[in-house]
Length: 409
Ligand code: CTP
Image 1 (cartoon, helix red, strand yellow):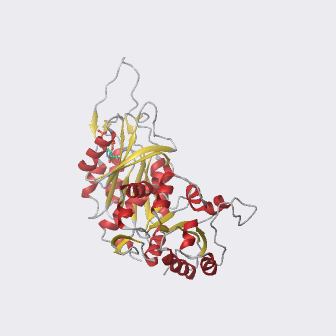
Image 2 (cartoon, rainbow, N blue to C red; image 1 turned 60 degrees about the horizontal axis):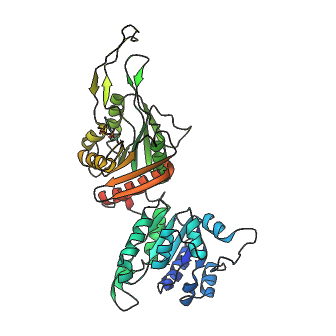
Image 3 (cartoon, protein in one colour; image 1 turned 135 degrees about the horizontal axis):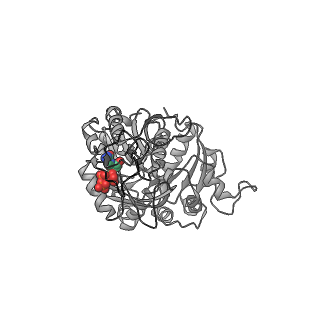
């Protein structure tokens, strides 16, 4: 059942909360599923569960102190943070959540979190008032925006303090389920993606065309991230050259009209449609022969092209997730929201284009992702990281819209 966990190197960070007793069970279950687990505890965690329990169940010496060396040839916190497939923080107290959200690194556990690039899964556990404290909720929201951060949300029920409410740590089975979702190849296999990327060319004559600066990098990155998620991906490469043997299907197009035709044909069975290609809004009537130099000026009439993304609502199956992009020079959020509503989208990835920053062709980007109920901002992130965020959100929405159809195990 748990193929996603087998042979994984995991780091279990235990902070100081009574729910640490459940993490003992979590550790035992993860070990049974074939994971190798290093336990790191905060000093306060020792008030709840002692070293020997962790040692006996993990088969490794648990670590609590930044200056404790487990291998003298390596720097403890860096090695621990980076040589793992995932980090689980269970229980995650309000304190460790706040430290991770703010980048505070003042003990081994928080230093590891500040250096971790692998997925980090937090399982919060605390009293309801602490959980619902605006500071804690803000910290959680902040963490959720990071591409590698996941949450096993706490449940409602009886708490150790004698009250009842939200704050009880998710059950170990639920944490393991979330972890399997993170190692998603198993879970999201079968999700069909249609991704477009690149820039159209609208020909004035057989040798000249009108285009724009979109390189297709985001489209490639989304296709790769979707592929990594186990998806069945088709990429419509609009004058963009994918790398050799990309692992996903590629259909090449040149013009807006051709791209519309290909999308209409291929989007029918897509669960998720990502329209990152920059499509010309207008196309000139193409002269059959090369336009010869003569007059001091030339004029050309341009005709509006089909809005592929807007029309795709009629081509996709019910429940399909549709994602658009928007490059704007002004009123970024407002314009992106208009596109979200007008084109009936699930979210819009909006880029600000200015004289200081042009996202076309760059490896990093600063974007706002506009959803119906919220806006998330990401500054200066790698396009590959942005792609992971897009894929993560699309899969979440796909799970909801398809009534869990794609999330069955
Ligand atoms: N788009 C499309 N077909 C078009 C034009 C745009 O599918 N003919 C898609 C783009 O791929 C993008 C989204 O619509 O995902 C928004 O594109 P953008 O050019 O930012 O906006 P437009 O709707 O064309 O409006 P404007 O150019 O006026 O901002």
